[in-house]
Length: 268
Image (cartoon, rainbow, N blue to C red):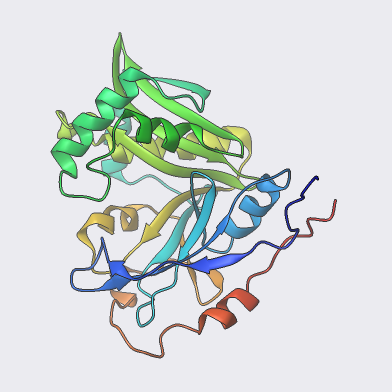
């Protein structure tokens, strides 16, 4: 007997767990499966509504009394590099970009482990082995690419990137921790802005910006930044204009959140 997937995505909520961004808080996520022939359409639509992809799942923060996490993207047209960012581009002019299919390699995993051990040894990904890494890279039902940055035979930085209808989504990036002065994380964002410009794509999606979280502070340094807030994208003002305060009325009930999601027509 043949079974078909339901046309309307089914949404679920994770159990609360410690927030990785703000100490002492609990996070909860709203998520749905990303699968089937309409995966690209669904990913495009929900990405424009603050969702992010992790393998074959789309998720968005849905905490009970906190709305600090804001999906962030850069408008390619509005972006202007700062003096510091122009210096970062010059410092990394020796790197060569190479785009490949979403396929994991040993060199990538070795660099990934060095990055985690140096920068996120106590994070949620610290115990990922080579099979977990391969799943993160390869289990994608949509159009994804691995962007590698090399000099000579050395692999310096890697970004797993999704190609959306309206931009590039930087799913996860990592780089050699040995040369902090090169600002490789910033450089990859700057280069993705250039890739999007060359491809005629208007946005580069960065994931979440969280006021009060030092881990996410760097995203506020990019001009042309937009954040998804209260159901719409708005031009980023300044870090001081956004609050990380908690309140039991900050977020809508789950049923209301789901009903307000705009779903694409998946009937063909």
